[in-house]
Image (cartoon, rainbow, N blue to C red):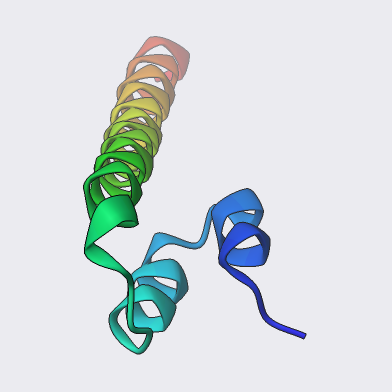
Length: 70
């Protein structure tokens, strides 16, 4: 069974937001839900940026090693 917390815990922000948009949420809880969604989105964005930076760093290291070996 799919629940709010199952997507929350999985870290899959796209599926989580699609699931969230398909549900009716009472106004009393909507503020907290969207704050939590924003935090997850920020974490996802940060992880993506770190991955891109790591790839860039590895590419630079490989280029430097190639130049030194010639």
